Image 1 (cartoon, rainbow, N blue to C red):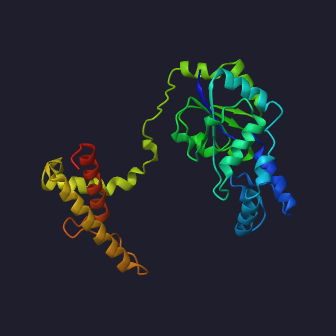
Image 2: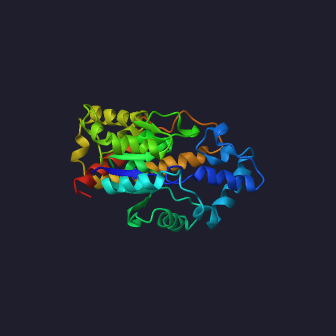
Image 3: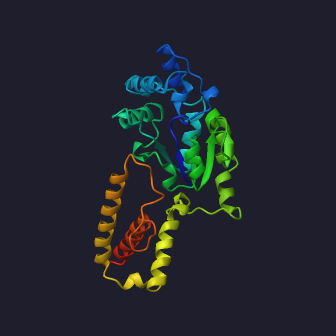
Length: 292
């Protein structure tokens, strides 16, 4: 049994089609194929402000959410088969303009998927941070960062990525996951590794840390490597506050003026932000050691 995340909009329900119909009813055109963008506003040939107003008008209507049709004629049947064979969860994004969006989505599931336990509905925008063996999704960002097997429901706005599998409908999805048992095969393949719960170091911009490393090297040369670990940790709390205050004062002072190359520390002549980052690093270390 595998843990499977299933997206809702654009996967379980034909969200884009419903949105297009609503846009047309308001007297505007809608073309997701031409725009090739996941941002629905870009599929409306109007100024961004107008497109945003249209989007919010549609999203604020309860009927929009409750009347979205299922994705295709096989969706319910195939999902139920998956539900009976695997640990299936619906993971969907709540839309901010609509305060009761979560409630309406739950109602939609009750109406169209009566077999599904609504306690297994999660609301998240950053789905790749959650643990599962597989995700069935249409959003490029979620597919790109997810660490398990990715099944992409094909759409004009997600053809810039290479998922594990790409399908056009739920019948094709059934063939891959249920009939061919692709998830079992992927786990047996050499080189496949799922790092659930581990930190995504790929999200760190390491170049931005160079200035911190420069300060660490300066300290190692001036004192000795790791000498900072022998210092009273509360000194770094005071140092952080001093450096942040100085940095903030300089930023305010230079606001609107021609920018300097960087704000320097008076002693080391290195970037002050590097010292701030070092202080934060030291404090984090001592906190994990239980010394703060």
